[in-house]
Image (cartoon, rainbow, N blue to C red):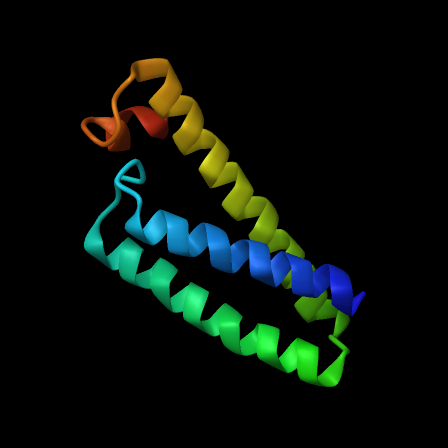
Amino acid sequence: MWIVSLVSLIGVTALCVIGTFHRSYSDNTLQRWGMAGVALSMLSLIEHVIATESVSPSCALLSVSLLVFALGVAQKVVRFSNETGTEADGMREDLHYR
């Protein structure tokens, strides 16, 4: 179970870093700071999981759930960018209604 959690943590970290710095993700500064904080905390959790080679069931569920959520947000951003041909302008209003 710890390997699944480790892969999930790595995926969440990668998607948060991409979301923080990519201009297609059009949200406010606080949300970007929040994603950066999640990415940094995931790095600490990755180190812990590698060192102990174990994870509690609740942490495993949380890491997989965060990955599923991050993949859903990434899919929404990519779909919106492809449908409209725009990257950042006007995304905030349109994304929430799809």
